[in-house]
Structure formats: C-alpha cells, structure tokens
Amino acid sequence: MDGKWVELLPEEKMEKLFETWLSPSRVKFKSPEAKKAYRERVSRLKDAIQLKVPDRVPVYANIGFLPAYVAGLTPEEVMYDYDKLTMAWRKHILEFQPDTYGGSAIPGPGRAYEILDYKLYRWPGHGTSADSPYQCVEAEYMKVDEYDALIQDPSDFLMRTYLPRIFGALEPFKKLVSVERTVEMPFTSAYLTPYGRPEMRSAFEALMSAGEEAVRWRAAVAVCDDEIKESGFPIFSGGFSKAPFDTLSDTLRGTRGIMLDVYRRPDKIIEAMERLTPLMIKMGVSAARGAGRPLVTLPLHKGADGFMSDEQYKRFYWPTLKKVILGLIDEGVIPLLFAEGGYETRLEIIQDVPRGRTIWQFDYTDMARAKEVLGKTACIVGNVPVSLLNTGTPDEVRDYCKKLIDVAGKDGGFILASGGIIDKAKPENVRTMIEFTKEYGVYS
Image (cartoon, rainbow, N blue to C red):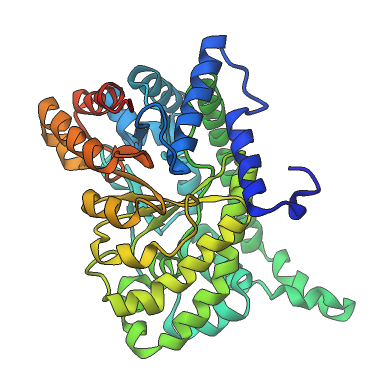
C-alpha cells in the first residue's frame, strides 16, 4: 500500500484491497485461461459480497483436514510432513474446483508446537489420535484477579503471564521484568538480568527452534497456495481476528470463568473488552494488508443462541464486536463473521452495520430468515450441514443445495458453503455440493 493510504476514504481503501485480490502482483498464472478463471472467480465473489447479482452463486470450500482424509492421509501426517500437506491440498482444490477456499494453513506446524510444549491445544498424535483434528484445552489461563494486569498492559500480560502458561518451554518468561525498566540507564540492569539466567537461554533456544520450524512450514504453505492461485483459484480470507468477548472467554478466562465473571465482575469484562478492541482491529487490518485480500475472518463462539440471553448479548458481546467490525470497515476491510452454532435471536441486532460491507457465514441458522432480515444489509454464506456431507447421499445434498439457492440465493448476495468447517465428509457429497451449485445457481 502506498503512503497516501491514510488519506483514502474507507470505500477507496476497500476497492484498493479488492484490486490487489483481483490482480495479485506475485502470481504467475500457468496460462491465460487460468488468469481469466481466477479473475472471474474473484469478481463473482466481489459481486456477491457487495450485494450485486453475479453470473452465478459462488461456492466456497470451507475445509479443515478434509484434503488429508481424501488423500488417504492422517491429520498428524500433514502437520509433520509438509510435502504431504501441500500435495493433498493442491490435489484437492484442483480436483474439486470450488470458486475459493480457505488456504492450506489449517494444519499448523506440529513439530513447532511439540518443541514449545504447547498446552492450549491437543493436536493429532499429541493428545488426540493421529486420525483426529486438534482440540482446545479449556482452562483459566488468565486468573480472576488478573483483569487489571491485562487492562493496564495487554502485551506485557500476554508475554510474561500468558505465554508461560500455554507453552511449557517458555515458563522462564515468568521471571522477565516489565519493559518500562528500560527508560533510564540506572534501571536497565534490572531488566537485563533475567535474560542471563540459564533457563532463559533454554527458553529462547526453544523459541528459535520453533520459529525455524514455523518458517519451513510457512514456506511450504506459501508455495502450495501460490501454485493453487496460479491455476486460477483464489484464497477467500486475508486474515483473522476475534470478537473481544471471545478473546477473553475462549483461551484466557475460559467458559466457566467468563460466565461467573458475567455475574460477579461485569464491569471488568467490559473494561477489558474495550482495551482489547483496538488490538483486534489492528490484528485484522495488518493481516488483510499483508495478504493483499480484503476479507478477515472472525469466528464467533460465545455469542451463539443459548449461550447467553439477548440482554447479555447486547451488553457484553455485540457492542465491542460492532466496534471491531466498524474499525475494520474504516480501513477498507470486509469482516467475514463466522456465526458458529445458531444465530436466530441475533439477526435483528447484527443488521446494524453498513450495507454491503460485511459477510455473515451461518452454521445452524435458518437461512430463509437470515435472508429476510439480513439480506439487504450483508452477504450471507452457508449453510450445508457438515453432518449431511458426512452421512447423506448425493441426492440429499443436491436437494438441500437447491432449497438453499432458491431461498438464500435470490437476488444475489449469497455464497454457498458448508455450515461448519469440513474435516470428514464423503468426497462424492462435497463434489456434488460444488458441481450442483455451478449448474443450478446460475442467474438468468
């Protein structure tokens, strides 16, 4: 982005990001046909996102470990053997040919997690079976009396308190001294002393080894995604951010902790979320600009129906999430809000956003009602059940997609995808979902 970025209006920033997505400078297309197909796919997505009527309904492959399973591999294999990872993802996308997919970075670098003794997740072969996806290990990684530490200095809290709790190899970081000690020379020695301890050297050596492994993984993933793009298939999202409530509740306070705090420390929750809001905006914006794609995914967890009342949603969840949404939009970014679970009672609330500047992906939500309430405001995505793709027949998948396109695809503003991330599914059902959408979802 040029130095005049800050002078642009939000709409101009958005169009700049769309232009970069449409014409990526580093991609060397394999043929003129591949370049044409790539541009057609991005244009189709752009029209749907901006509530225009494209040539047909776009179809998004929202895949997790599915390419590994289809290739006869385990999740553990693709997290440790990057050649197998790139082979499986490249083969899957080129064979199934969706309009877009989520990139090949879902299987993280297992060896890096192993080096750091990662405790926040169990991953294939390390806490779960080699044939299973990873799982979050919920706990109170932030204690109830640590709200003020997080609010006062989030980076310091994450560095000296949070990281030692989720990475066993970084436990010595607990002995680090706050960085403000460096503002005057007489205090600097107190800051430097912990770095000289033997256990700190071990921690940094582990961090460097994990970083080197992550570099190898990132290089493999980048090559894989570049090759897929060169064949004409764009990546959907340009990055990741979170709702402030989820940032607190998913991996800091945990579900039990946050629900107790809702009743016992509501003001601290709100204060902490306000402190986290600009950080969530910054995370999303920097990711989108770095990737050269306007979409940023926000997986929404604790705001689902049944998790909290509408009154609690309006007080604790939506206000700071809306600020993140508007902050991203102000920087030209399109928030892709993945409403996991059901969002039936939230639809009237979440329509309070600028028209054509957000995407809402729904899991279990009634898509007819989502279209009715939200369809004139935002592009909606979804919601073929993963259970149907896993246990149904191609005819059942075809019937579901037809109803979905008839209802949610009317007048554009719709992208067909699975309701959740697809790990295991019958390949013939996924193929049917994609091919039927291309055949039936054509706008006259």
